[in-house]
Image 1: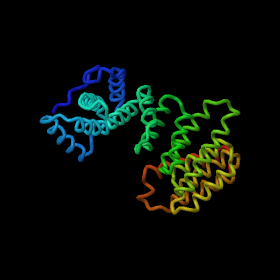
Image 2: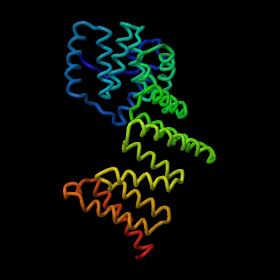
Image 3: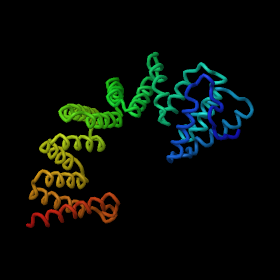
Length: 303
């Protein structure tokens, strides 16, 4: 069955007040460069569903195809299939959940938020996913504190994926930037404590360590950040990235002699790597940072 482009209001339930908004948002996001291909397994299933729907249109098949199209970034076509499914089975929780996913993916948070609020008010096995979706929609709407609250609820309920801790911390950091200077510190400290809870639960996760270090530097916790970097460097066989961070922090803290020594340690760690590892993009970038750091120290603070 062909998947023609979705036009304004075409195939959308007349009672849906967001049909024009949905299509406009889909067009904008698709033009922004969304992925347009499905995984091979999804492509096979899409072809099967095309054949099934050609012979016998059924709401659940349209719904399944809409989900596959949404996952592939083909949002306009997904919206068309959701409208077809709605005509056949208008009172479906699965349909509402699929609509919420599509609207969040296409940043139509004004449509998504009331729907997600209603779904969350009902007892639901999909509650973790609904909270994730609502957190995304709230963040899109600029309601950062509420978005961080939903992520905190997920974590409190036992969801311990690293990205939940990371996104909550980033939301709180964004929120801090919107506050008067006197109120920023409490939000940053809350973000840092949340990351520490994640690290205690999950062990060392590089993305969480990086975020915690950034907050320590923002808060002016130089001694704590230096101890943190030393601990990370000691705990790995590949300490070069942490040694460079430590060197840069020492220089920024007005400790050039120690900074020079730390840069030299980082250079020695890089030199100990195999040629293959030294030639990776990440290691070449580190080598440039070391050269730049030592060069700046030599010009401003000769040996």
